[in-house]
Length: 278
Image (cartoon, rainbow, N blue to C red; front, side, top):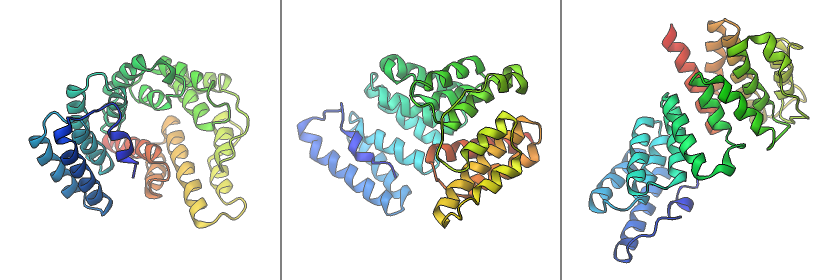
C-alpha cells in the first residue's frame, strides 16, 4: 500500500475544532484498509465526508483506497471532489490522471497530467506515466516527445526506449521505429536488455524468456523477471499483429502480481483492451 497518510495533510490545513476528529477518521480508515477491509474503510470515509464536507483529506484518502481496491471510477470521482475543494492541488490532479488511465479513460488522463504539469513544469521530463497515456490515447507525436524528454532523466531505461519505439511504430511503422530507437546505456534488470534487442530486431521472443532463467534466479526475482518479460512480449505481439499471443502473455504478466504497481495496471489495461476486441 502507498504511504497514504504521509501526504494527506500537505497543503490542506484543517480547522482546529475538527482536526482531531478528522485525523481519527483517517487513522481508523487506513487501519481497516491495511487489515484487508477496503469496503469498511470506504464506508468510514463516506460517512465522515457527510459530517465534514469541507475536509479534502477525507476524499483524498477515499480516492487512494478506491484506486488500490480496483474501483477506478470511484477513485476518479473522489479525486474530483478533492479538486472541488482544492482547485490548485497539483498532486490530486496528477493522481486523478493515473486513476483515469486505470479506468481506461486515456484522453482524460492526458488532460489531467497536462494540467498538473502546468502547475509543476519541472515534472515534465520525468513524467513517463503521461507518455504511456499519450500512447493509449493515440497521441503518438506527443508521446514520442515525452519519452525523448525522459532521456534527460535516465539514459539506461529500456522501458523508456520501448515506449518511444511504440510511439514511432504506431505512426510511421516498425522499420522507422528501429532507426529512431533511443540508445541506452545498461539496464541492469533482467531480461530488459534482451527486450531491447527484441524491439531493435536482434532477438526473438523466445530469447526474452530464456534470459529470464539466467543466473538461476530465486523465486521473487524470477517473478519480477517474468512480469516484465510477459508484459513486453504481450505488447510486442500486439504491435506485430498476433493478438492471441499478445493476450496470453499479458495475462501471464498480470498473473505475476503487482511487481510494479503502475506497470501492472498497464498490463491489465492492455489485456482488457485486447479482450474487448475479441
